[in-house]
Image (cartoon, rainbow, N blue to C red; front, top):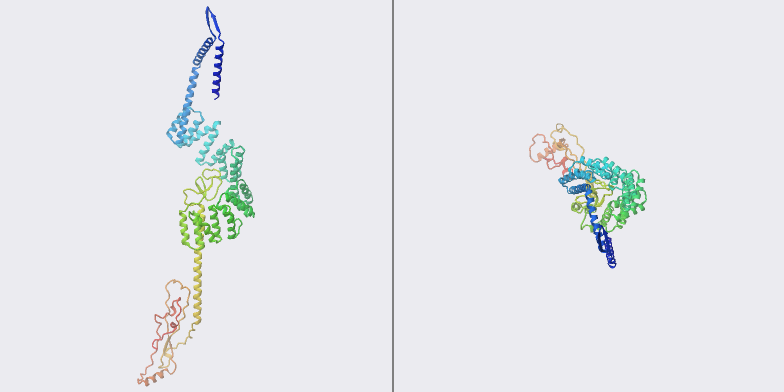
Length: 592
């Protein structure tokens, strides 16, 4: 635009000059060596302009001839440099697409045309990395470190090579050197913070962050977030060993980032243990309203140790009201209701989630069926549905699923890399395993209850059997005293001899027959007992014979022998579980 204005001004001035000369005509006469030349002023000015242009052109040609060697050399150098830059560009593009042959050719051309350029060393290093030659790459990076203009680039390359080789000590030392030389370098500060966090030196990591902030290498919001993450990590590490210091760190972390879940959970636990329940509840509820998380619900439920299940349910209701439309609120409320045996409320809370249940919802339903109705079948059905249900969120960082939060990523070392999201391609999450343990405990409780009922029933049956046995023993007549045995030879001559069986002992009735531990011993056979008949029995018998018209034989009366019990007589080996039959108590005397 400025050039156009200047051109218009110049044309206007020329037109004004020509018009001025046309209004004032004149003549010019030149006499030299007998020559006389006369002309007008405009023609003379035109001749002077042409001659001046010709002289200027001749001077330019003469100057070009004098400077031609230098110009040719400069042109050659410029052409060579252009070819070298083209080779570098070609090589970098080949590195990006992974064309090893093109990278090698470009590296060769660049090294020949631009041997001392920093980008030539970078291309050489990248080509060596692509070819799998770390020693060549390290040599190229060290050459770049020696050059002040490429020192930081060389340190970055050496740091990457050390990490690939697994030399964490060398990588940490190189990152420390780069961070000291340039505190605003993000990769160097992150590497130092990662190394110090891995060593548990959270104070040292915060010092690096403070130095980065002092050099304006990070904005204020990012600085607050990172400082809160480091403070939360330090508080969690000190929670068991130094609760007072841990509480201060956690409260400061919450002040910097009120929605940071690990900081709020740690602060809630420590403040609750210290008795500051109101402050702890406020911190946890504020974080839960922004980021509903099951860990916050657990902290709120067990804020005061020793509380009853109903007290925990009241606190969870208050917490759920801070985020009533969130799925995590319903799950937390259902868990608290199940623990408090408020099964109807748990069903009402879970009912809206059953159209598209997640794995945790299915497991909560399984626990509810087992706890409320002792229905193991339905509990197993819901557990089977959990395998195919939607996944629940978990802590993930760079594709790694973890059961707990960490300040840095285990893969890249990036600070504040963990996020609470649904992990892709994962069949189960750590929180699902925790819920599955609750279902197992509920089913085990049902089985234990059933076994206890069976045991009580057996004990009751045993007591009843013992009571019946005692009643039978009390009602059973006592056995007759043993009669002294008399030898058959000592009996009165001609007297009949009566043989009776000794009374058998009554078998004890047990609640449960003992298991046989070998061949059962045979029952002792009854021994016949010969008793002397009462006096006069022989004479009466002879008298009856005479009355009947039978002659007396003069022989002694045959003895009456009692045979052993018949097979249908239970005797002492009767079944202990059967009630004794009074009729079986009688002894049969054969021949009477």
